[in-house]
Amino acid sequence: MDQEKQKVKIYSAEFRESSVKLAIGSDKPITQTARDLGVNANTLHTWINKYSQPKEYSKTVRTDEHLYEELKRLKKENARLIEERDLLKKAAAYFAKEQR
Image 1 (cartoon, one colour):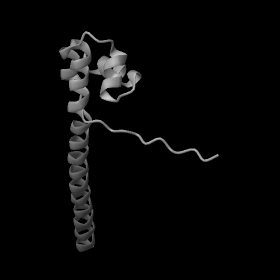
Image 2: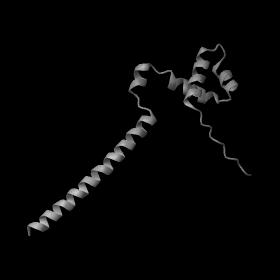
Image 3: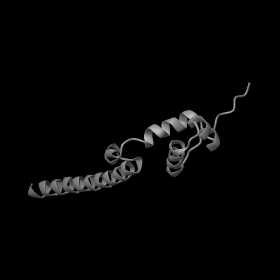
Image 4: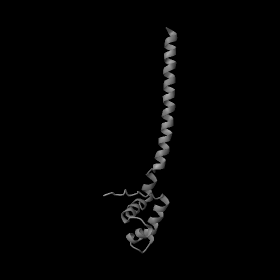
């Protein structure tokens, strides 16, 4: 029996947020709203839990984009520091050799 791999659907943040607003603001049950949107009901419940957290907590939580930007910055800084360290090692070796 061949089983087809289920394709993972990736939804944009805007779609998730608008889905949550629609589900919370609607008189329909969440499962019906999920069906209308073509989303699994459990997925919509997860989004509701995530996006309806108090604003105080969401300010302190860093998004993946912020983490990615910080990682890029740190990698760049690390490369610069390694370059400086190697240059200082060469300079120290040169001056030690010159003093002999």
